[in-house]
Image (cartoon, rainbow, N blue to C red; front, side, top):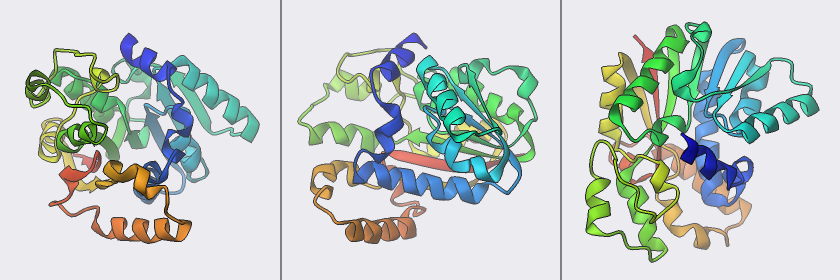
Length: 264
């Protein structure tokens, strides 16, 4: 996990989701489904919380929110914001998803896993992470988990005139990755799947799929062009996107997918 920590130490994760219109589309879509999934007074786990963007978005609806993250500076930032906001119902814990203490088992109405799953390149580790989410949930609890679509993710490289070799493309088709190519720092710490593969891994861990959502459309391919939009243009696009983001024919064209499922 040291390579994951090193990567996130090198970037500003706290502002990533507001950096441009494409990122905002992902954030607003994800936030909509997250807030709809949480009932007033729920206890929520935010695994891979980063600097707590979603943790603080949901805080007013939760009786308690626990933010788990592997990166020390993220936990420090959450604690800083928590103090500034005088948030008394937020706990921040430094740990990887695979090492969350068993004392939290069966504690949560909702678990958010908006990143850790796609940083596990071995299938057994991904399944172990899903089993951990299952154990953390109360009976009939809800998991929201994000994943990366390989077709859309690979397509983005070509936008920047970065052309993967055949060896890279063949590796990225597999159900687990064993090689790092130095071609892209993020890809070297990530795993890209597809909607069906992710659903199947969730089903193996006794989750019942409720929704599969594309959170950012194809718009990562036109981020530069989108920056000339007005706020009204963006609101129109967001409305259009939200009306189509659950279309099964389109989900695999999104860089980021989001699955909502229930503990069976």
